[in-house]
Figure 1 (cartoon, rainbow, N blue to C red):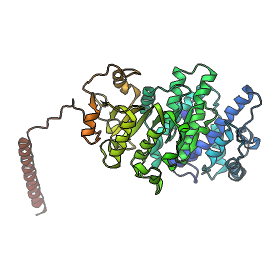
Figure 2: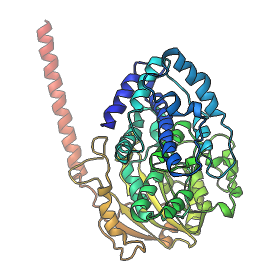
Figure 3: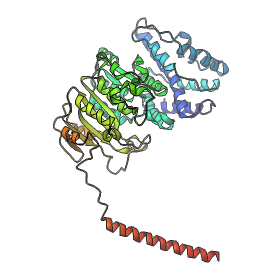
Figure 4: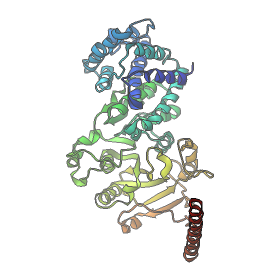
Length: 483
């Protein structure tokens, strides 16, 4: 079956419902419905393969009980069941307190979920379409996973939801360079829809996971937090699609709400990969949790937190805006702290168009390791492919566009790096002399020759005079026509 066609037809049905307004609500509505179908398919497989397994969802509210029969409840009865029984029951699930309790996953996801649809007949049509997908069929799950990625990509049309999405090529490149292994604690403190987590899972499964024990080790070492309800819901569903049985490690919370000093040594992590929100301001009082770096700028607060959370020898890859690189004041103190505590070994500078259409802002990928101070920093300027002026929705950045940087990288030990037209090295002494301004332009770039200024001014004056002449001629013609 063609999953893309199925989901498109579901969205067409939703557009007929007066209660669903816009893409954000459509995606949220789709998400809780898909979640219940996905987890029920998983439950049925686990009931067959694991002795004594029981679904976290009470029997009455399991997908197979109320949704799977295409001739089942519909109309007002279905609407009353969803709003009056299903949602209240799942929002108030009692937890067992046992490790790996899937009830927590269900309750946390439905905590802020909402049924926007007002027609029980249209709900039944959507449910019947969803029920056509078998999430225990690996081929169908793969196809749906591909569509799900595109669904996340479409979030820019859902208002502020677009801020959560990082181009998949960027996440894949960062994860590839960090190279996580099963058992290493990997944390994304602002995980959005789970792009870095899913890339990390794919990377480890492709390269290292060969046994059930290794897979269990991989799953048990994942950590994530997301502040906003919609991306949290999408992330949990994304994890289920990637075969994660217990995605309760994806917490719905604000990572910055805890005082920096309260993060203890036993909470330290091996790896951080993240694209923290930037350009935004945190709510009043959050800056008091960071007394040394008192600011409301989210990117700065997350960078301070990441430095704190890394274990010795821990490594990080972080997306940060140009403003962090050249900013002064708190930003200067923060960069000094980063380079004293960590080896900031690589900065990959991205063109402004990478994050279009969400933003046209210069961004950078910072790679650093904790435990030794920075001695020198390698910069690599990523360029748009030849023959293309910028990245766009129709021509987005792809993983193969990073191949030049991967070839230059020098492997795990970063050996044999050389200066090229796109790569250059800066010593810590130079950085200090610049007041920790890291907005360092490529010294190998040749400035565009726009010509001699006096000649250009003369050409401009000549063009303006010519334009004035045409304007006078046009006035004369119009005056003659009107006379």
